[in-house]
Amino acid sequence: MLQRLYIHNFRCLENFELPIKGMSSALLIGKNGAGKSTIASALEVLQSIGRGINRVGQLVQSKDFARGRSDVPIRFEIEVLIENKLYKYALALELPENFKELRVFEEQFIVAGNIIYSRKEAQVTVYNNSQNREAQFLVDWHLIALPVIQKQSETDPLHIFKTWLAQMIILAPIPSLMTGDSNGETLEPKREGSNIGEWFSGLLARYPAAYTQVDQYLREVMPDIKDFLNELIGKDFKSMIVRFEENNANLSVSFKDLSDGEKCFFLCAVVLAANKSYGPLFCFWDDPDNYLSLSEVGLFITSLRRSFKNSGQILMTSHDEEAIRKFSNENTFVLDRKSHLEPTLIRLLSEMSVQGDLVDALISGDIEL
Image 1 (tube, rainbow, N blue to C red):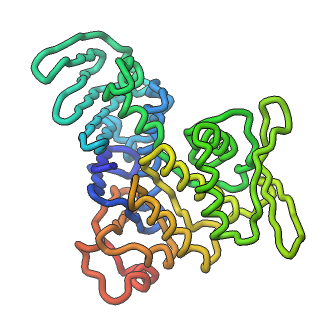
Image 2 (spheres, rainbow, N blue to C red; image 1 turned 90 degrees about the vertical axis):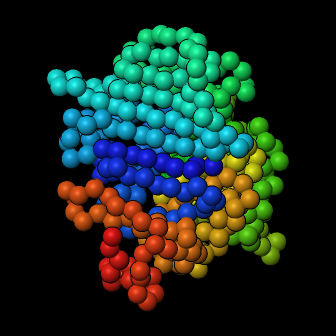
């Protein structure tokens, strides 16, 4: 479970801290441009590192410095509780004068208070314990050390943490890109949901029982659904087909021809099944209520919150009043940014004084930090 996320000098986030310790679900609200999607981008940097991308230039660009302030390093810090152990990872990236690509300034990984490795510029030190140094070696300044250091076993803290990062679910779906076609398998969905076919294939291949979980949710939101297939239509190529039935009449629909909202129902079903099958997982979903009708939003948000209440953790953003009403003041964060020249501010709603109804205050623009 994510305990704390700290981001500094990255786009509109300066000295920004998101403390969600103990929250199985939380909501971010605020005006457009306040920084909600930028949090997802920062998480995506860490997710990519967990998935093996270690070239700094593939993760962060010079344009990502807040207001072009390249004299101060970009810094990411994340604290995660995994099986009652606290994992802390910090990464700082700099852009020296006359350099075109950012490089690593410092990096550190700590588990349960013990330093696993630390890095200053090119020098990496791996520790046997907090007192004794085990090994030192040099790494190209433009390469991040976390994906480079080899795991010793499946129980190696490095492996456990990298797996957690890699399996983070970060979503801002674009239904037009979600075709349901696949020529491979994965447990690592893309942010726009374009590889839902590969994700669905990977989920069922490794966890066949997940089909029941997906089917159960889809029957709640689409009562006329009969079943869904992942048909092999060519060598190593599959395509998702959805079948509906009512009054003895049948209809088969290619996944790509479903409505935008129906595709999001499928995505939600796979998220819920993934969290149950190989979780607990952390999920960030940017505007999950997009593409849904007003009558569908409440059940959609409630299903996500209920699933992650017992296992895993979900962080959402929303502008929809029905979605906002499904959260309490104790797990709703308000983001505000005075102008494009100012950094994002954040406060827990329970710490703010809001006159009258929250949604009315948001509509009138009366909430400011």
